[in-house]
Length: 584
Image 1 (cartoon, rainbow, N blue to C red):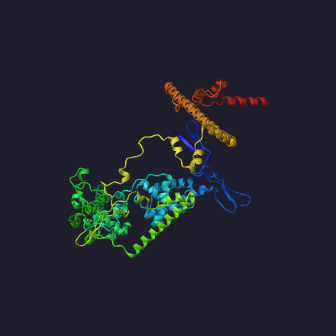
Image 2 (tube, one colour; image 1 turned 180 degrees about the horizontal axis):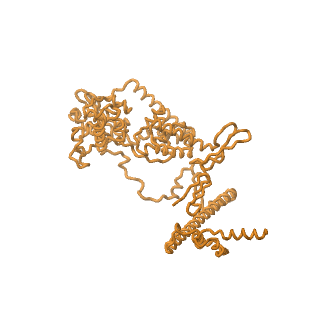
Image 3 (cartoon, helix red, strand yellow; image 1 turned 135 degrees about the vertical axis):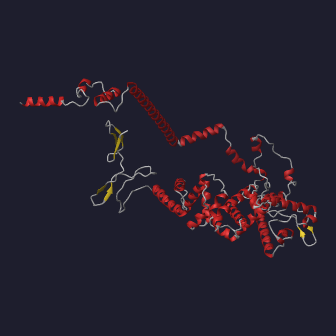
C-alpha cells in the first residue's frame, strides 16, 4: 500500500517493511560529460520507440546528435513529412499513425525506391483515410501537395496492389455534409444535406451509383436537393466546389430523371415514400441500370430495322430520353464519313495488308518449302482480322423513310449489334471436348509437331533419369546442401530451446502462483496481520515461510529482541563492558 518511488535510483520501496518492490536501472534523467577537446556529449544510449537497438551519442566528423541507421532516418523523416501533410489536411493523429505504419511497410518492400517521397506519403495517407472512411478525396491531396491527381492515383493503385489491400467502395454520402457547407446555403444547409442523403440512397436502389465516381453522384444529389428547397444553384456552383466536370453532373441528373423516383415530390421523399417495393414503402420500384436500359433500347432498334417496322422507327418511342430536341433522334440519320475518316480508314487498311504480307513471307522463309508457304499465304500467322473471320454478323439492310435512311445500329466496337437470340456458327456447333476427360500423354506426344520433339522429350524424364540428375545435382552442390541442412538443424534447435524456455518459465510462474496462494491461505488461517506484527514476529515469520537456511541460530536471533519485540541493546552493553574490562 505505502510504496515510495525513488527517482534517482529508479526503484520502488515499501515504507512499512523496507522491501524493494521494483528495481529499474534505466533512468530517464539526462547527464552530460565533457570530453578531452572540450566537447560535450550525453551519457548513455538513446533507444527509439521503433528502433531495434540503441545508438550512441556524441560528436563525429563535426556533427552533433545521434548516429542512427539509414532505415531509421528514412522512417523518422517520413513520419515528420506525414505529420506536415496531415497538419495541412487537418487529419487526426490516428490517421498519422496508420499512415506511418503503411509507410514502414512501403520502406520494407522498397516501394520508395525510384519514387518521390511526397507521392508515397500521399498514397499512405489516402489509404489510411479510405480505411477509416474519412471525408477526404484524392484530389484534396493533389491540391494540398500541388501534384497531378493522375500521378497520385497511379502511385496509390500500385501501392494497393503491392500490399493486396481490399478497400471498400467509397460511399457518396460521406461527402454530402462536407460539400453542402461550401454552397452558401446558410441555415438551410442541414435540410439540403438530408434531402441529398435521401437522393443518394434512392440512386443506389436505382443502380445509378454502381460503377460511378462518388463526386459526380454527390454533385447531382446536392444540385437536385438545393433546387428542390428553393435555392437557385447552377451547375457551375456545384462543379466548382466538387471539382467535377459539368457534363458528368448533367448526365447523372438525366439518369435520375429517367427513373420513376423523379416524379416524387420533396414531401414524399421525406415521408419515406421513396423506399419502393424493396424497402417496404409505397413509392416506385427499383429502376434498371442505365447501361442495361441503353443496351435494351439498342436491341429494340436493331429488331425494328431488321423487321422493317418504319412506323415504330419514326414514332419516337426508340429515341434517347437523355437527349432533348433533334439530338434525341440523331441515331436515325446516317453518319456521313468525312475526308479525314476515309483517309484514316485507308491508312489502317494499307498497314494491315503490309503486315499480313510480311508475316506470310516470314513463314515461307522459315519453313523453307515454297509449296507449303504458298498454302499458308492466304492465312498469315499475325492478322488483325482473324477474330472477324471467325464470325462476321450479317448486317441487315437499311430502312428508308420519307426523310432519312435508318441503318442497322452498331455497338461500341463499331460492329453490328448481335441480338440475344442470335448465335455464331461456333456457338451452335457441338463441343469437341467432354466435360470430364483424362489427357492421354502417349497420344499427345505422338501428335507433337516434328520440330518440337526434342523439347518435349527433354521435358519428360523417366524415374531412373530423374534419380541420375538428382545425384549429379547433389554432388555438385554438396556444400550448399550441407549449409542448408545445418541452418535447418540450427533453426529446429533454436525453436526447441525457445519452447523449453517458455515451458520452464510457465512452470516457475505456476510454482510461484501456488506458493503465493498457499502463503496467503496460511496467513489467513493463522490470523496474522503483517501490519500488526512486531519486528521480531515479522522477521521470524519471514524466516519460517521462506526457509532461508538451516544453519541459522534462531535462539541467538531471538536474543536480539527484548520482551516487547523491539531491538535490545543489552548485547551491545555487555560487549562494551567486556572491552573495558579487557582494557583495564
